Length: 386
Ligand SMILES: Nc1ncnc2c1ncn2[C@@H]1O[C@H](COP(=O)(O)OP(=O)(O)OP(=O)(O)O)[C@@H](O)[C@H]1O
Ligand SMILES: O=P(O)(O)O[C@H]1[C@H](O)[C@@H](O)[C@H](OP(=O)(O)O)[C@@H](OP(=O)(O)O)[C@H]1O
Ligand SMILES: [Mg+2]
Ligand SMILES: [Mg+2]
Image (tube, rainbow, N blue to C red; front, side, top):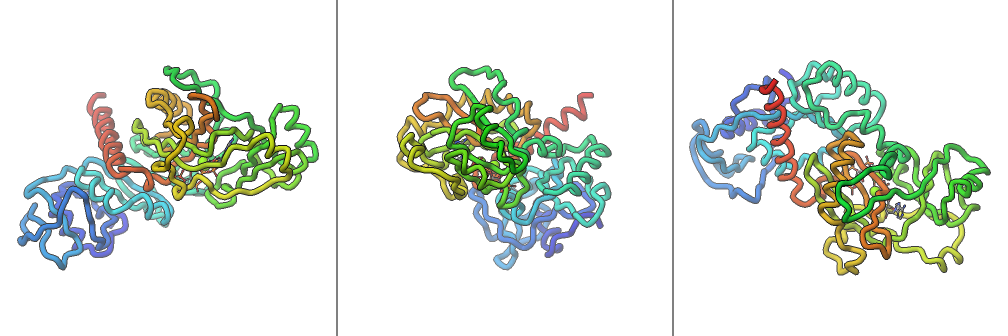
């Protein structure tokens, strides 16, 4: 039997029958492991009967799904996923699985202990795993399975796992909307300890303070250990390989622009406060700072100065994301943007993240169901319009 049958297979089979999943995939759609599935739009109801398309019955069943009787759901899309357990827990939440299944979108766990080509068939492979081994597996799979949509192509992901290549080409983008302007902070790479780094900073025309960021992003906490370097002497305290990026005053609020295909959602997060000239004169050395803009630092409901907290113009973001989708070759990413303090709409892109924490994005379940439905439609058209 392909795939990894979820525990409670009888219940899964019963649920599939009641959901009218008609396409026999040769393996169960993993993910239902006896969880209680709640969905805003549905209220569990007491219905007896086991007939095809009937409601799932009684209180004792772990599944309390109200489904319109006799609704047959055509399997539209099979999404194989290879995610860390942490990411699976935060992304593949029960509500998303339920809403997706009702649209014929099925998530199947990829068994990492078996050849990927022997699993499936998949319409989509959704992945976020680190390490050379997985990258080789998915690159090989792409070659042998061009018909499968790989989210996202490994080479595009690798590009943003390097903080230098991540931002390359952005400053040159020509946007179709001029309600804002997009820049990238001046930055330079320091590959190894060298006393000459300080001189190179001067040659590169960078101004202190600088944000020192690990050059490589490898999913470990270390790749998120950032420092503020106030002067040339503090560079010796840092561990290359690094990117040194000019600090841009932005009023202590940043914008996380989540992208899911053509769908864009923006959230506000707290950020580092401005650094005054007085601060610069008083402070020296390098200081590590915490993940100040994590999901816990939401500023969506904070009472903030509008000139700082006003969201970037929608048309500007749409124009920017359209260009970034092409430049980066990605569909699942977010960008961190800051507004230059005192400017109306001069924005700096300071970070790009692949397959970020979407579980924290408002209405992320509906966003992804719409995304996968659009993907299924596009694949159908491509297959039948040859
Ligand atoms: N050039 C900069 N100017 C001003 N503030 C900055 C700059 N770069 C980073 N920051 C601040 O540091 C925070 C973290 O930076 P960045 O997003 O680059 O790190 P990260 O480790 O990739 O974070 P994550 O991936 O969790 O978003 C930003 O949200 C912002 O508050
Ligand atoms: O969703 P936001 O608030 O942007 O935070 C994300 C970070 O930006 C990403 O860098 C994290 O991914 P990595 O830890 O693999 O870099 C990502 O970790 P995750 O993949 O475990 O969700 C998130 O922490
Ligand atoms: Mg960031
Ligand atoms: Mg990041």
